[in-house]
Each structure stands twice: as C-alpha cells, then as structure tokens.
Length: 207
Image 1 (cartoon, rainbow, N blue to C red):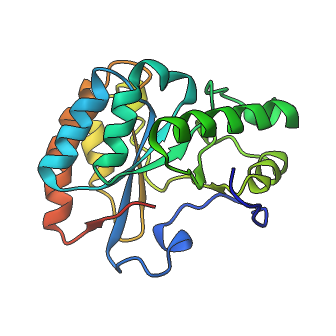
Image 2 (image 1 turned 60 degrees about the vertical axis):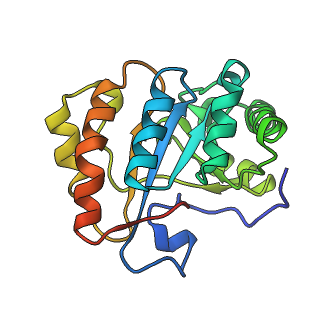
C-alpha cells in the first residue's frame, strides 16, 4: 500500500481540495460500483466518444471476472480508485481489522491486474467515521465524496439524473454508477449531459 498520510476529519468534496492546480473550471466525473461486464464498456465507450476522463471507484471482488475491463479503464487514461473489496454499506460498523481487509485486498487486486497504485478511497454510501479516516490514512488513501449525486443507482428516471448532473459547476465532483444493477438510465443520461457540460466550458479531470 501507499505511505501513510495525515488523517482527515471530513471527505474531499471538491476537485480543488485535492488538486489546487486543477483548471479553474474543472469538474470530476466519478463512477462507482464496477466493473460490470455490460455497463462498464458502455460507459467507457461514451467517455471515449466525448473525450472525457473519469475516476472509477471499483469493488475488488468484481475484478476477477472483469480483469480486462479494469485494464481497459487504466489504459484509456482514467483514474482507478479503491471502493473496498465487498462494498460493506456501513464501514463505521466494521472493526479496524475488517476495514484493513477491505482496503488491502481491493488494493492488491487492482494492483495485480493493472499495476496501478490507488491513492483515493470512497466509503460505500459515503458512510465515514473517525475510525475509517484514520484507517485509510494509515494506508495512504484520501477520502473522496461528491458534490452532485443524482441517485442514479435508484433508477429515478433519465430526466431526474440529467437535471441533477446539469447543475454541475466548477470544482464539483459528480457521482454516477456503472455497477450494482441496471445502469441504462445512467448511460442515457451521460450521453446527453457530457457534451452539454463541455459546451458550458467545464473541463473534465481525473482526481
């Protein structure tokens, strides 16, 4: 794992918190819960078409059968990050030993397949605690949250997802998903939103 960093008291919710040199109008698209054999390729195809780079928070146990997809993510120039091994929805309820296991095993699988060394972590559901902050810092990971959550995981409808994503402003971190279920609404929404946000002068960056 990475060298230890100082624990934070809250997660990072803005691009410029983690990269003060990011472009003034930078936004970051983050994609959670993959890789998925159907939806991840569709998302990657869209990102390539619109020339957008994103940060993928992947679940370690899903890498095995989808190793080629994880390599494709990295080879396409996207950032890959740690989203635990098994996606426990309430990490504050885990012991330090269990948190360690979730982090280390996911990190190991990502590194073995891609050679990448993740430096970012997102707690499932955005459920943080001092114990979680301290444990991830021990492994050199920075906690990442989001500014814009269209709740696409709940399949609220394309119009709902688009409306929320279109609220993006410079510095925002956007949350979407490529795993965990039917992500057709997410794909349709991104197809509409990505070019329009770029037309507004926003610049997509990795975290």
